[in-house]
Image 1 (tube, protein in one colour):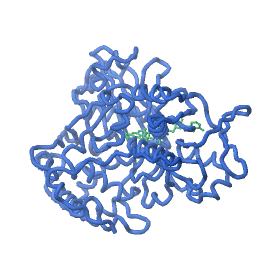
Image 2 (cartoon, protein in one colour):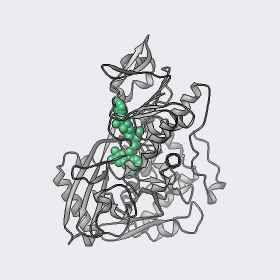
Image 3 (cartoon, protein in one colour):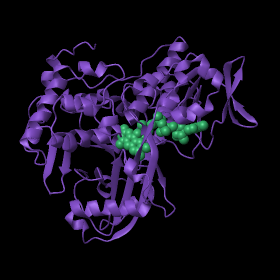
Length: 478
Ligand SMILES: Cc1cc2nc3c(=O)[nH]c(=O)nc-3n(C[C@H](O)[C@H](O)[C@H](O)COP(=O)(O)OP(=O)(O)OC[C@H]3O[C@@H](n4cnc5c(N)ncnc54)[C@H](O)[C@@H]3O)c2cc1C
């Protein structure tokens, strides 16, 4: 078995197959594992995440993957989400004592950045989602409808759209509301906020991201497999029109019974020969899956400027501020300036999803913008000195979940014998997330095992509905 790509999709497929007794050889072009969800060392020795990554408790497959590779203990879960607006008003979302779906009633009622009208309109839309068990009829319109259109049909106020729906969904989907398929947006609220009391709990790595994958190599090697870094697959070898191997360089080919291609869809589209795209037409439309950007701004202050582990900002370009110093506290990984920084300093990371407006801006402009917003939101930052800063722009961070995009997402099993796909962009039902990537890897592993006559299930069920939602019978989709 050959897996091409050592991101979460390839790792999930590789580890699942190794656990099933397969000898897996995984080829990754870069010198480290984790793909987009990784971290690396800057020239000055500072370890930084490619971008802050967070998960939610409703991401059951990612949780399962972390357990398999011994990384569960490296994720800290938080049950309080804090929002700040430019006027200094603060809102919190935290499950109270009421049963689902009413567990946020208390914190929502006192959420200062929203008006009563905003809240009533949000409550009406939530009731609509609950009534349809997360699957309203309109979501099945041919070609899909945008989240913004769905919200307009639900008569949402501008405040509700900009200070609630947009805030949650642009981060979760990495796309603007008018460019996101409503089924992804509604699903986020159903799975994370409505169907159970715990689905919204936010998991944040307490270590640099690359440390989460330490166990993967060991797991694959335990079964006689290998993980080969710095090994890009540059081409496919076809014999009689069938996939017969992969080419790593002029003199190096590798072959196997089955291949899982777990690279980004843009890279796969370039690698696949035209003849294979004709054999399986689902491979001919990868170029129709668009991408959207994320920008991370890393700021190191000479003193502590915030106490919360993270906050969400409203009405600003910056959407999240993560207090990396606090999040890494107690982490005893290798020597690392950020981790071992004296307590007197503080490292913050800002995240801007769907950051189209920043693509043309210079590094200096982006730092100035982020710094101004941090100083406005966090009074202690106004007197603090910025010791250093960096910007990581990911122009093609994730696939864009635009309305109808699922038409172009291929399944993990293809019509080409021995060729399987994994990647957040394959058919998972999820947007581009770590959970989607792991699901795709598990589905690819299931497809491989089905094909070999030894079926096995890796995919984990969603969190079970709790509270009153246990009694709610999901309505059949249209
Ligand atoms: C800036 C940013 C922030 C994000 N924030 C979040 C978040 O907070 N929460 C969340 O859930 N998700 C987040 N995501 C999305 C998440 O990172 C991805 O959905 C997920 O990591 C995708 O995993 P993957 O394995 O499908 O793809 P990738 O991670 O892209 O892995 C593909 C791998 O294939 C390798 N590869 C490519 N071509 C070849 C080749 N020819 N030969 C060998 N190897 C090859 C690549 O080097 C890479 O390692 C974020 C993404 C970005 C970019």
